[in-house]
Image 1 (cartoon, rainbow, N blue to C red):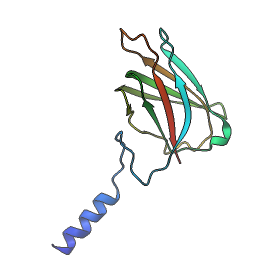
Image 2: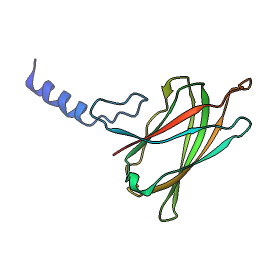
Image 3: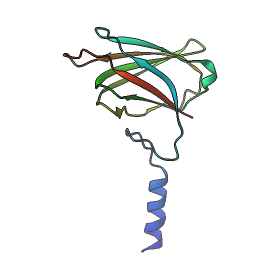
Image 4: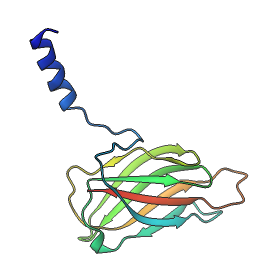
Amino acid sequence: MNPALLFVSLLFFQNISFTDSLSLPHEHWHLLAHVKTSIGETKMEIQLQSEKGVFTGLQFRTKEIEFYIEKCELIFSDGTSLEFKIEQNISRNNRSKNLELKSNYKMIEKLNVWYTLPIKSTRAASIELYGKH
């Protein structure tokens, strides 16, 4: 193989940022919260404990039933907030796309999450929130 082509290829792959729904083996995800949605509700609040630390990424996972997550608002311990439009249907036993927090290295106090359950759902969705350092 041409050494120049190999060098350019290595530079290209070194700068790729993975933001799909699958986490890589070297990424360390930590369970931050486990909550259940309420039937008939469209918004939930997830409180986090301050000792959980500062995270560079967040991800939602569901186990029992699918749900549609519209957006998420992060409330930081200093009172500032950051809103993400997610607009993703998360199927049963699957995960959301990664929410990258590259420029906000602050303690997250709570999250407000807007969601929709399937119309005929008689069960709540079990949702886990993971954070990556």
